[in-house]
Structure formats: C-alpha cells, structure tokens
Amino acid sequence: MAKRSISFVCQSCGAITPKWAGRCESCGEWNSIQEERPASGVGGGPAAARSAKGRVFPLVGLSGESKEAPRIVTGVQELDRVTGGGFVKGSAILVGGDPGIGKSTLLIQASAVLANQGHKIVYISGEEAVDQVRLRSERLGLSASPVALAAETSVEDIIATLQSEKNPALVIIDSIQTLWTEQADSPPGTVTQVRASAQALVRYAKKSGCTVVIVGHVTKDGQIAGPRVVEHMVDAVLYFEGDGAHQYRILRGVKNRFGATDEIGVFEMTDMGLKEVANPSSLFLGERNANTPGAAVFAGLEGTRPLLVEIQALVAPSSLGTPRRAVIGWDTARLSMILAVLEARCGVKFSQHDVYLNVAGGLRINEPAADLAVAAALISSLSGVALPMDCVYFGEVSLSGGVRPVAQANSRLKEARKLGFGQAVISGANQKDANNGLDKVRGLDELGELVATVASGS
Image (cartoon, rainbow, N blue to C red; front, side):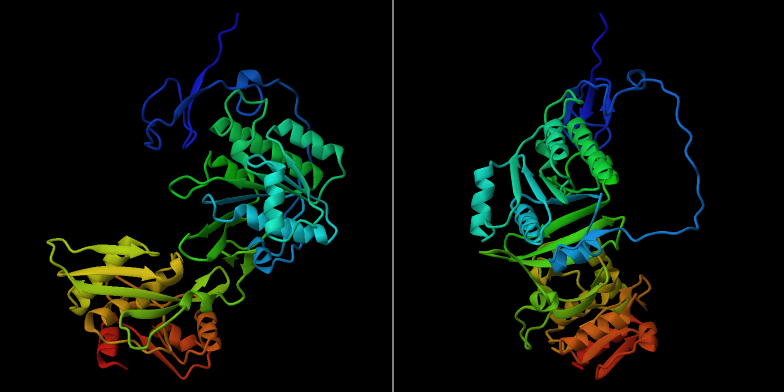
C-alpha cells in the first residue's frame, strides 16, 4: 500500500514544511501551520503528473496588429475609472477589503446596473443564503434587477452550472475563502483550497470569455488572505478601503493588466448603499477654520487623479522623557525624518513636544510629495500661526533640507485653482515649469525658507 503523502502548509504565507512547527520560519506567524495532503491536481508533485509529449506552438514577433481588449462598461464611473474603462471580457478580478466595508454592496450595485443594461449577470454567494442577498437588494432598491443568484461553495458545481447556461457576461464569487474543490484534500479557506479554487475560476474565465470577479478576505495586516500566487494569477487586484468612523470608501487598484495602477474611486456610504463622489477633494477638505494653526492643504495625486486633502498637526509640550509621536494616515518613519530635518537644518526644536499628525477624512497618503505640507502644518502648530486658507503645499523634503520637485505639478495646481485656491508653496524646480492661473506661486529651494514664510504669516 502506497504511503500517504502529508505536508504542512502555513495558512498565512503558503510556505510548506516537512513537519509541524508552532511558528512559521518564513513569515514568523504562530499557530498558522496546518496538515494537508497534496492532491494530484493543483499543487500536486511531479510524480502525480502524467508525462505527455508537448505540442509545438508558433512564435510571433513584437510587431503586428493588436486589438483593444473588449470591455463591459458598468456605468458606475468610479468603478470604471479604477478598472481602466470597465470590465475586460475574459478577465479575472480580485477584490479585497475589511469585513463590512461594502464589497458585497458595491458588487451588487454594479451587477444590478449591468443586468438592467441587458447583460447576463450571475452572483454566487458562499457566505450568505439567497434570501439574505435578496434582503440586501431590497434595502438598496435593486430587487427588480434581473440578476441570477445562487448560494454554493463547490467549485465543480459552480463551473458546471455556468457552462450549462448561456455564458454570462459577469460572474461574482463572494468569497474565495468559502469555496472548496475536490482537487485539494484540505478544508475550505486553507492555502491549498484557495489556490486550487482560484486557478479553476481563472481557467474558466479565460476559456469562456466571461469576466469573473472574486471577493477575498483580508488579514490583520490588510493583505488579501491566502497565498500571494492568487494575486499573480488574476488580471486585476482591487482593494476596498475605508474607516468605520467615516462615511467615505475608496476603491484602489494595485494591479491592472488592462489599465493604470494606483487609480482610486471614491464612494460615500449611505442608507441606500454606495454613492459616487464626483469631487473627492471637497469631501476630504471638510470643515476648515481660518484661525486654527496646524492645518495645511496638500495637493496630492492618486493615480491620474489630483486630490486635495487637509493635513492636521498638533504640537504640544510633553511631560514625558520620550515625547509621543502619533500618526494617522501617513508614514511614521517619514514623520520622524521631517522632524529630524527641521531640528538639524532649520533649528526648529521638537524634542520637548508631543507631535500628533492626522490626515483629515481618514485617507491614507503614501506620496513623498506630502513632506512640505506636513512640515508646514508642524511649524504652524508649534508657532501658533495659522496658514493661509487659500494656499496649497506640495514638495519632497531631502535629508539635506532641500525641497525636491514632484511629478505632475500642473495637474495639482489646476485642481487647486478649480476649488478656489489662489496660492501655492512648491519646489522651486516645479515653479519654473508650472503653467497655472493661481494668483501667487512661491517656489522654495530650502526648507528653512518655509520656516521664515510661516513665521512671517505671509
């Protein structure tokens, strides 16, 4: 009798070990290793595969006629923006996000719009019963839309059902962690099952020309749960972000084979579902007070979309030996760098003060261009001098105290002008090429010039 092959797989990173251990050596997670038996299908070893003679396929050159990928325009403009103009036929899209953030709501609304346009849409839920999905659609006012519903978790049954029907235009799977396939001998949600189920769905999408949208859970670190190979198999990866304390939601594209990455779509969560935000800058600026120091408006860029957001800083005397440094919406290490540059190059002391930094609206900023706006907010809070209400800031700060130029300065300034701003403080190198209609644009070469500007109140 053949010996049963057993392996131990980390459910956090997918690493395979020959024996069980309490801690994964690859990712460092505790109690994440589970026993699994590799199957002869997806994930099977070389001995399980049948040897067959390969076929010869033709090789072609780089030049030649290429056609634009056919798309299904959803009509939800923010969703179409992130996907690059709509869903590409035959593609697989992975959507991740925190529980309760609105992934299912967004996909139900998009499927209802497409179904009303005459497309055949199939929504398969592995987490909720059909009646639960119907209740949500009634609450959103979408119960009249001709969307085909089902509650199933078997991958073989799902694909057989889809193949028996006329090929739908869009299939939504909610979620991949609840599916299981006979090709893998492990419980649903494990690394092997997620990988095998995703590969089967991607293969169906490529063969049938149907767009498959897969919903994925996220881990405590904000990454989509399961092996990273799933993100490589699909054509696009979208993250649905937001904060329960705020009404806005952001759909961010981190991978897209048919469009630009780092695009965002902004939605507002209401009692009637998600609504598109046509002007996200006005949402993130919110209520502003002209007499409050420590607030600076940053002209940022998310993908191709310019975005204005308020950065708030509070500098208060500290009674502790080690002052606090609290950051929400920005990189903590970058804040430490800005504080060090201000102390070493500009003579502004923060060593006896607590520093709190917040990005208004709960937005997460990753751009180095926000350095100048953060520095302006910190100096304003420390000096007690309020910054001009109609001024925006952007520029990267170097360790030498210089202000470096950033990309697409014209787009940032045009967005500021459109929202009624009349002044801007930017890098001196950007000022030479900036074509704008603002009343006053001041270019800085050194961060010390910003200190003098804020202190003078100009």
